[in-house]
Image (cartoon, rainbow, N blue to C red; front, side):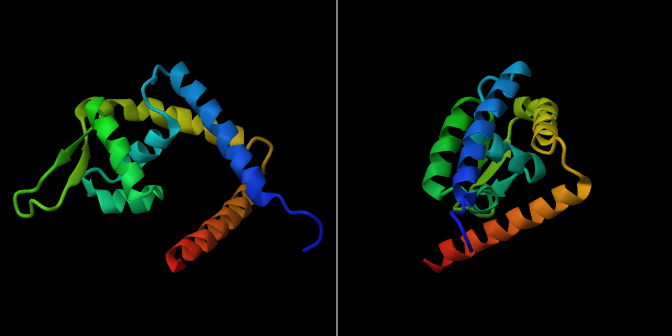
Length: 148
């Protein structure tokens, strides 16, 4: 590789800037109490309601201690609840509240706005190729984390 490569630096800058824009868009849709990290949790739960903390940690790539603190705050705010199945009281399932399920459509609209912003000026082929590369980077980093 020649020259200085800035992929990680650019990804970090994009992450910060996208988070700020995403927060503003959430406010425009009257979703004021959800930050982008909590949105990641909700996004997973909207697709897989009633999963364990371990599954949620894996799907969000959040550490269990960070995730547990965020779940505490989200439960206090009424977005989710912990359910203890009778057949196995050691198992804890995370479920959305009815009020939060109603928020899903607005959150999906914000996500759609962000996708249009991310890929403005990109062809379908460029988007597919870019996401392939991002998935490869994510896989490389995941492997490294698992090997440590």
